[in-house]
Length: 102
Image (cartoon, rainbow, N blue to C red; front, top):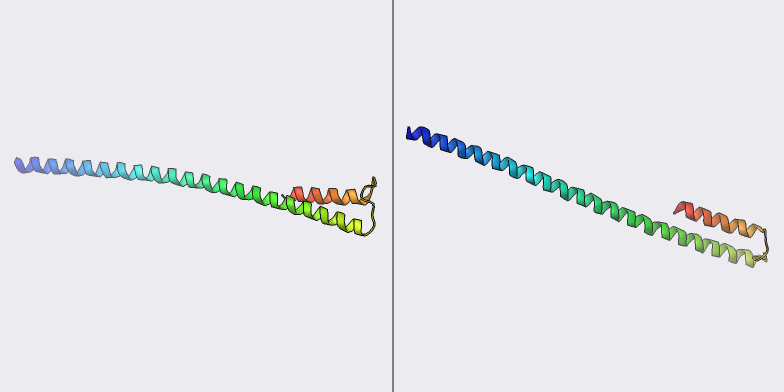
């Protein structure tokens, strides 16, 4: 009888260890999922930030291009202050393109 009792205790101990191991495994899997979700959020924030920086860089390039175009038109003798000239259209096109590219 003592052998049967010892075997039963061993069986229950093994079962308890198996349950504990399964619970620990499930806990670790959940923690890993949380960590991966947090990392994915951080990666998304970084990509968004990089996109904003790139958009601002493109807008700045558009401003420089418009300034360069104005300088070239002035060098050709065009009146930049005159109304309804092609210079306004060129500047508007440059600004629109830069905004769309950004």
